[in-house]
Length: 275
Image 1 (cartoon, one colour):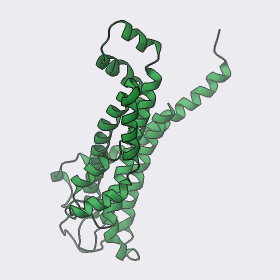
Image 2 (cartoon, one colour):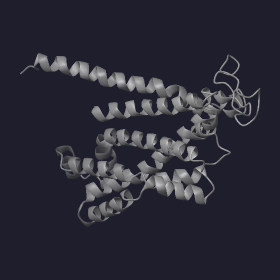
Image 3 (spheres, rainbow, N blue to C red):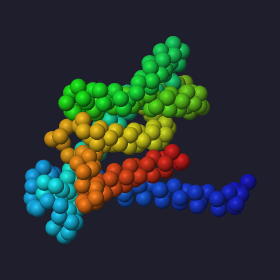
Image 4 (cartoon, rainbow, N blue to C red):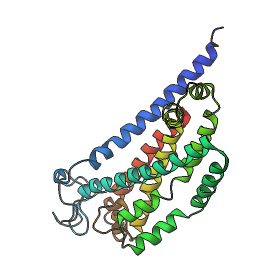
């Protein structure tokens, strides 16, 4: 029996639309990734040193202008990309390690193990991450490492729930039953059959964790409780507050950087979630 041609006409534009979102997201975040992995020695200037007169307008020599101390804003934005992406990826890695492990064990084993792990997940989910991050960063003098650890160890519950749901759905499928019948070990079945089929929603949720970590880091920097020795987009915006009327570029460029990076990652997450 052939496929309805009307259905084929609908599916093709939808697929292209999803691929377009993915491509747009990759193109948006690619410059930030290049900037994040760019060696510090290749930066135009040291983001913490005065290199010219204060409040120079954007120009060829200083694409994003200079700030009130004569520091190059372009170099600071590039250095801030390294901080934001490092924080986002590290938080996501910690959250994925805990969340996926917890979820796949809870969903695959079931019973009391599932109940206990889900109660722990609910407890972790009830923790107000942003306020805990504010408290811990304030106590440890704005340490970026502290912020990453706090966000990483409090961002995993969503991943655990999604992975558990996928594991519950997959463990009753015919190919998993056949793998058990053939004598496959639990570890082999989890790594070869369960996790590969659950990876798409897990990646979609993980990308949202990355954006949450980036925004939290920028928010704490804007509040002035981040490490002053680490370049941050939020701190750039904080420093620009007093000069909004006569130095618009000080806040516009780091603000655009945050918006574009979060937009690009969100487009990728949306594409993964719709497929």
